[in-house]
Image (cartoon, rainbow, N blue to C red):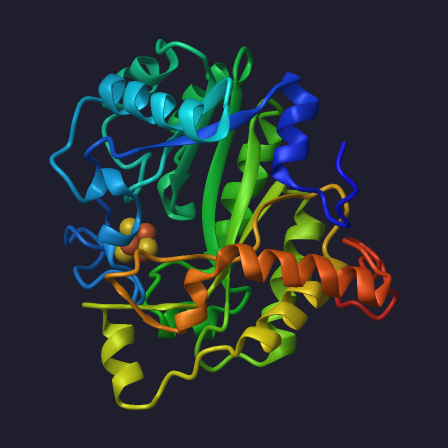
Length: 314
Ligand code: SF4
């Protein structure tokens, strides 16, 4: 096990499978209710779907072919041995149940795939979809990645998420109750109108809910998004490198030590990224976060149960 001061996903996977396990990003051809008109058309104000993964930027191959190519790349580059098929692009539970079953099964049938990770919205996981995933979860590692982004409804409205915090809580609880699923919450630090303390509220919420993982994203501005327009009008400040590093360390301190950290920042494709420029330097950011934790002599969960943390606020 590593000597990291947070519960890194790579350590979790090594402990669980005894070897190097990497995610392979899959674009299964689904869409999103916040884009196809059923809920809205504009999407979340920061969303440029080309930013999801390389597989959304070229002609889409079959799921098995994407899996094969992904595994080949990860083996060569990282000496990876096993893989999770990561249904990443758009909303990966937003399709008829039979289509979902077929898509997940196709990925699971591929060589060295040990499980699934399915990215989706909290308002797109009806009980029959959770039952399908839970049945897969009986035999294979199965994660559901649910977008929360902020613990504040006002912010969710501002960024046009078109779901609220209550729907995230409801989806997480229904998924956790099934017993065989792992839940990873996605949050964004730096959303417009949020104070530092408002951003930290999602650490308290996720800890209280008992989710299994979190992806912490830096708010970055991508081309061809409503956020880019607002940024060009000077309305959207972005984090300086040091500010972000310090905030992530605060965040980790408040987060339950049992929650696996799947991501500490975010990097967009260089040709889509507008700001902050340092977002491309993912490794530098992770190194700086680790150094800052060391300097503070602190770790994930160090302040998770402070009596004054507003645990009952949610
Ligand atoms: S829910 Fe996801 S795919 Fe849909 S608009 Fe928002 S970020 Fe994009």
